[in-house]
Image 1 (cartoon, rainbow, N blue to C red):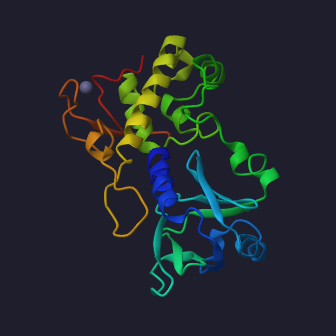
Image 2: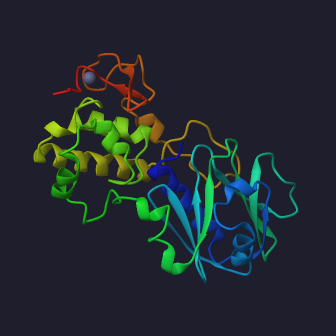
Image 3: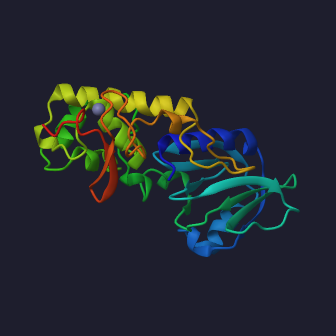
Length: 274
Ligand SMILES: [Zn+2]
């Protein structure tokens, strides 16, 4: 499942291919993908030029002349850039046909992805973006702010990291890696956290996500022609998906447990519940 570094990588590859292209028509093969009014969605996108692409959490924001196309890839969403003349792909659910004969295809085996059209005034004040917390590198995200927000709760460190309304963009892979960097058990209760640990949590989060972005994200498989992530960060994972392998710090075997209903990887020796 793509998380912040993978979505950032997809954004960068999309920008190289679709910027300044004009949408001549929209074809929708799986209407449930679109969470806005369907006829209005196609009508609004038609004849618009893609001026920029931004990211907020795990959302891609296609900036148009007028308004925005919001896209969330969820489990398996991918984009392909192909000539319009090429046949519809299996699992292709939406297509933007550009005025120059190329087309951007949205492909999603699991069909969990979503798209919205948003007017300029409502982008950040309506769902889903109004629910999102801080970007991991927002200068306004201070240790004090995180401390005040999480300290009163009885939650686990991992559930706090996964909570998109606190800090947005972290999923299962990077939550496990951040807990390892912090040397805390993912089930560690944040009611016990100190300001010093929150400071370290923030620096672990920024170091982990920045390194993953630099390496193009994590990918288990690669897909020909996809505007996606063929990243190398999966080779740098310390604990996530590493069950049975030796911990990079102490050589104890990495274990898989369940925390917050999610498969969670850790080194019990290095990561303390205290
Ligand atoms: Zn260890």
